[in-house]
Image (tube, rainbow, N blue to C red; front, top):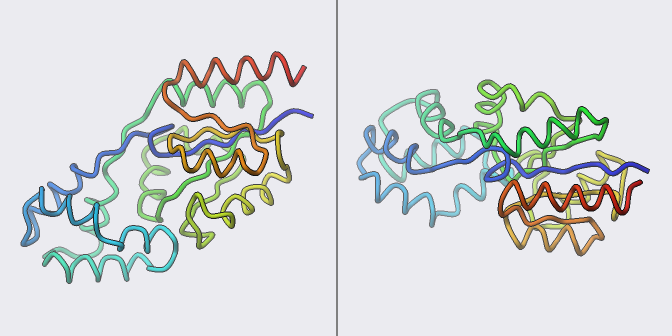
Length: 203
């Protein structure tokens, strides 16, 4: 049986830089960009948002109260989500796999502001068979619940799933379920591993 391919989003298909958002949001708040970046990195608010504990409105309200943001939700959302850039080599790899008839899925710890922005601005994002997002599932990688959701969506288990992620703890959780897990360190290494597996194990 042909494998399916599961791609993390951030740092695999798109790069991101929260300092971009910090500069824009800080210009409309009471904090400096450095303070705001440190706040986003240490506050539990982003995790609560990405795990579905906070809605978009709730996340905005909490951020506004914490930093004194002067804009409305639409303005905040446009600043917060506009942090991404494409990673062409991995996008090309996914497109090649899709053209060869393999099913591909996105599997991401993320939020609705980010997914809507990427969907609007990056055409490659439409070219997948399904999407599992932490904020919809109510769990974040490496929690078991989100991996179970991925297995349910694609209808496969174990070594039939080839999983690409940049976070070691997420890869370890997939490998513990029997997935073929690739720690994404470079497009070349990821491509080489996939090529070897397809040649040796899925003839």
